[in-house]
Length: 161
Image 1: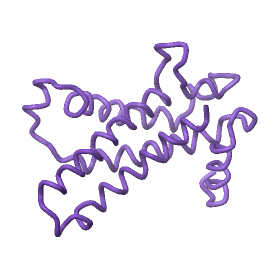
Image 2: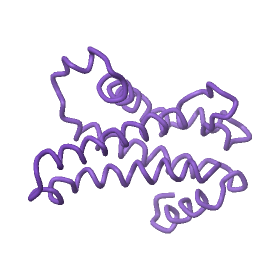
Image 3: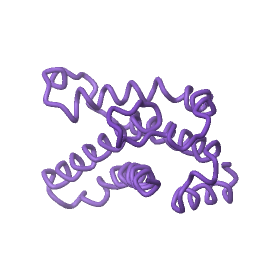
Image 4: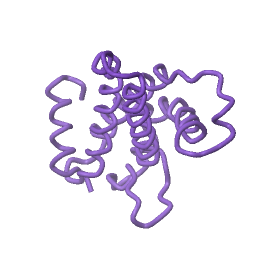
């Protein structure tokens, strides 16, 4: 279970970082190539944001769904997290925008005035970074698998936990 969470978090952060580098990497290539790679990364980021939003803030739709509460014997500890609540409205807004503009074919995505996602990617990056750190800080060690424990130790060593 922790491998899935680790994959989503790491892939989200790597996709954001790759998108920031894309203009330099493909500057000499055709505009079409650069835009294609950018669009693929934007769709990946949108998918990871939706998955992480559901994990950190959602309720399971199906029995197989994994959510952050699954890692707590007392779910109130996670539900009352101030970091989680502080970041929720921004992530909810970005998730709604992703649904409207990226992952669904809708007329709502056609009349968007601000097509620049850079600010929202930065906001999502920081919100998920601190929400993930808070999750690792609060979740009981015995419920975290090897990969999440490794991430928790990395954050501890860097002074973030």
